[in-house]
Amino acid sequence: GLQDLRWKATEDDIRKAFKTLSLKYHPDKVSKLGQESVEHAEEHFKHLRKAYDVLSDKRKRAAYDSVDEFDDSIPAEKDITEENFFEKFGPAFDLNARWSVSNRVPKLGDLSTSMSEVDAFYEFWFAFKSWRDFSMDLEYDPDQAESRDEKRWMERNNAKTAKARKLAENQRIRTLAESAFGLDPRIAKRKAMEKQRKEEAKLQKRLQREQEEAALKAEEERKERERIEKEEREKIEREASKKDREKMKKHMRKLKQRARAVIDDVLAKNADPDTKLHVGEKVAIVLAALDATELESWVVALEEAGDDSETVEQLLNSEHGFVLNGSERETPVKKEARAERSTSKAEKEAEEVEKAWTEEEL
Image: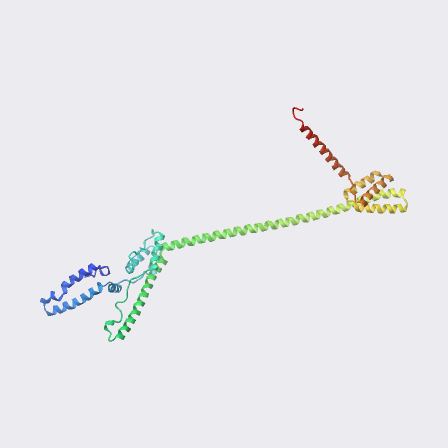
């Protein structure tokens, strides 16, 4: 028989087994053993012939093998550890590989299997195509129907049952693949590595963001310090400028007092009231127009003139004329600067003349 081979039996195995059993149970071979033996042989030969008709037809053979004895169980998650994963799931996939339409079914492998092979394995099983057929061993036998309508009704119900069994089978294979994928130590290791990479990338991104924020904060603090320092400098400069202005005002007041003192002293000795009034107006105009440097030079000149009323009068009229005419005076400082420029120009021309002489001319 084919009990040991079962679904693995080839067409040649089936033919040989049928021939062997036919010689044993054919009625003509047992006719000499009596009528009871013949009847028993005829019954066996009838079943033998029906079995051969089923097994020799590819479609019927597939339907028969589909309902043959088979372990549909899936390894329980509670029984799986990293150490026994391949021991438990390897045989389960090998057993279910018999239903594959493709003859090239990838193996589960082990811990040394490359991840590309692991991915290919699960891609195959998640898209598994089964040839398993559930059209046999159904509830109704259409050949036993008493009418055409009853036969059609039986066929429809059988088709629904077969379809439901097919869907359940596809889900069972899917559950097997999903269960293995979720417990596979290789997948778990890759997920852990990917999680670590993501955490490292997240940490790096956070550190970079913190550095950028720290740099931005430092820049803002620097700008704030510069702003405060600038404000303090400007405040100090304003205060210093204010002090300088106050000092300058005080200095101008003293210079004006000194100027008036010299002129008043001269007028007190030599001038009449009308002249004093007229001179006072000139003095007011001059004092209002002169800056500190000009005023100081003028006051020094007045003080040097002393009691010389004629010189004092000339200095006043001269300065008054400059103020009224708006012409530019040549102050002692300007005279000194003009003298320095003249000297520098003369020295430069002398150097150019000396350079013009060649060695032969010398």
